[in-house]
Amino acid sequence: MNPPAPDVVNLAEHVGSRVGKACGGIELVTNRRGSRVYRLRFPSGDVALKLASHNDDEQGVRDAEHLARREAAVLTHLHDFIPGYLIDSGDVEGGGSWLALRWLSGITPQRLFAPARRGDGSPAQRSNILHATVAVADRMAQLHALGWLHTDLQPAHILLGPTAVDLIDFALAQGPHQLLPDVTYRGGMVHFTAPETAAHILTTPDDQSVVIDERAEVYALAAVLHFAWTGLPPTTYTHDQAPLQDKLKDVAHGRHYDLAAIRPWPWTAFENALHDALRPQPEDRIPSMTRFGEILSSLTRKDPTR
Image (cartoon, rainbow, N blue to C red):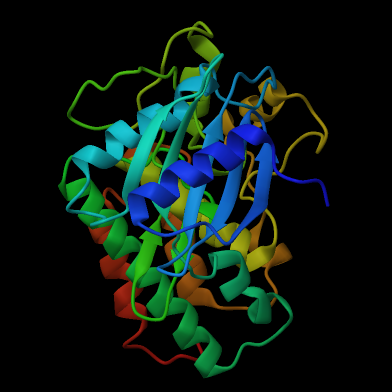
């Protein structure tokens, strides 16, 4: 294993000065599309160190070098939503930005649903899924009540803990405040992009941001649940290796799988909730995260074998 770069070591020392402890270890967690995430080990609790740099990948974010700085700005406004999460942030010499966050632990929806994808349709498994998904929808509804949208929902950005749900990666969040540095928003991961958002991306210049609303985020959460439940996104792409623009066209056209053909086992009530949250036309879709949570919650009071 290669030793961490000097810039990472220096930042780990700086973070240590903020938390009052020496860093006991540095682990690279992810390195993709201009973003590196490290886990810094401290006796008082681990820290996530994010470094953002320029990115040329077509599926990455424009202005990626500003992502860490912008996330810090968002989290400053959301300090009551995630207390004590943001530790520090700054610019990287030569270009880029960084931030340090309290390390949050939990499992993703993908991992939670894994036994179901392998065929476990027991009442206990169904109950675990429903209570967790209600908790996610409720957490999202709390964010929306503050006037903010996450805008980049995907399985890795939802952490299910024993007693709470945590959301992470707020760099692209949209809210009531104009934040600097600005970042051009061209949607999140394509699998979880609402059809109307995909259509908007396709019809606006690459250097212009698109804006989403709560119905698009309802779609995104339902798409995450669909992916966790079936192992596939809602959209059936013309070609799995197609360029991003072609995949966006498939999403915009509402090219969905037949859920009954790809589900691990029948679960009519849950599938109906997903279907209503994934309707291609936003006016036909479940209108709010609060309502989506209510629908999911109602399933916990019904026969778990249905």
